[in-house]
Amino acid sequence: MQESANAKQAAFDKEVVQLDKKANYLPEYSGMYGADKAVATAVENCSKEEQAFVYDIIRQNFLIGNSGSMSEEERQANISLGMKKAEYAAGNFISEDNKSAFLDAMESIAKLAAAGSSDASGNMDYGVKKGNYLGHGSNLVYTTDGLDMMRTMDRSAYAGYQKISKESSNADRPLNTLKYLTNWYADAVNKNPGMVDKYEKQSDKYVEEKVKVQKLDNTFADIKTDSKSAFLEGLRAFQISNPNFLSSILKKELALHFWNN
Image 1 (cartoon, rainbow, N blue to C red):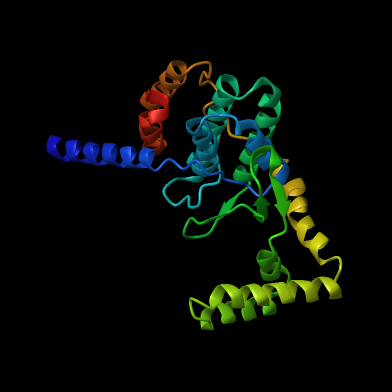
Image 2 (image 1 turned 90 degrees about the horizontal axis):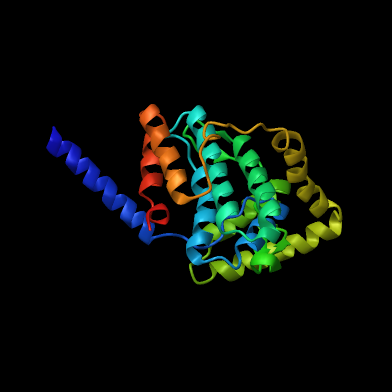
């Protein structure tokens, strides 16, 4: 029995080490341009480790891809944990000039996450399209995602795009699909000048009606964020009091290199 437990712990430890080695310093965006730019601006002069910490809040606590391994109560609590981590970031390495905008942006993304829904397999839908961004940090610029607009606004054209993509060779596919998308976009905008604006407003409407009204879970409201040791102490105390709640997530959190270096 003990050997089995030790083997499981060893496997978990190995997984955590691998996760840390693969720390992703690339940005993770929500699709809400104002919030995304505020976060990108706030972390652009931070270390890579600090940037990864912030963007992993969005990936691992907020906008998870699949919620099949947790209950809805746990998913909402995981968002609450993400907000406490955002508070830690704001208090410990985000500059004073960016602190308020950063927290407002992270709260907006948390509310977007809270409003999300899942299908029968746990795959999450957050209701907001993700546009294309150019640049980074305070120079982040939004551009309309033409392919997603085609998918959303012109299903028959999108079916044609998929057919061309499927029938083209690997070498020809990028050029063939780009030509198709470019020609469609020019023709569609010429015929319907208001299409782009209508497409963009879909997400704005969703945010106004479904996201801004969200009330965030407060499961981790009592966690102290003034230091790493205080944060970890609060998490361990919560874990002891709630051993079967978010157990895998809390184990990974407590073992992260960020908290223990």
